[in-house]
Length: 221
Image 1 (cartoon, helix red, strand yellow):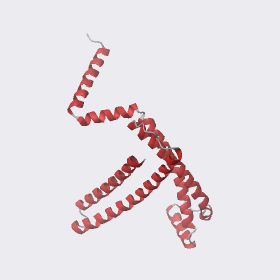
Image 2 (image 1 turned 45 degrees about the vertical axis):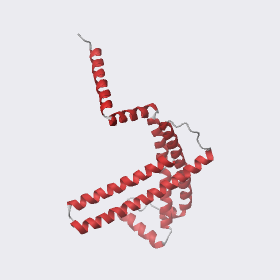
Image 3 (image 1 turned 180 degrees about the vertical axis):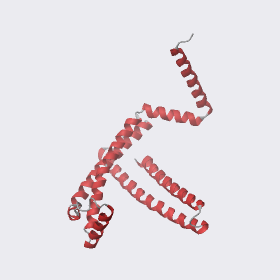
Image 4 (image 1 turned 180 degrees about the horizontal axis):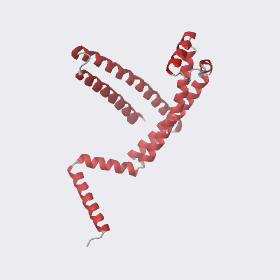
């Protein structure tokens, strides 16, 4: 009578044989398995963690930049400050009395400088980690550029990604608005087909924007 260990080994052997059979018959399955193995072999989870660390670190400089932008908006005019104060009082009555808009306007320059420096550090670190991860995943052994050239390239990548992100958001918004008008003209405002078409157009625009950013990352970084 077979022991439990032998039965488990037999099940594993049959499963392994079935998987190998699928790999021979279906190239897509073989490609997926080889991708997972490459990811594990090259410590992909650790590389992803390094990129995520710097990406998460950039959240705080973005908050500082948002604070600075709010300061410049508040300092634009007295009417703008009063309108913002009323809007905060309507939407967030609990913190309206604690929000010192004059102090925000007075520290806008400092917050902007801190935010820009922090975002520059986090962005350069994220791109450096991403480049190293891509090189390790591709097993690229070509010599890297020197430190200063690499940082300039990373800075250019940040600018390109920022411009692409802003442009993609604008293009996606225009595409969605144009599709909405066309579908509304053809099928009316309450048409299910119009609603589905609008949603599909928004998804297509988002996928196209993400694909463009992915190509920039692969081709430039």
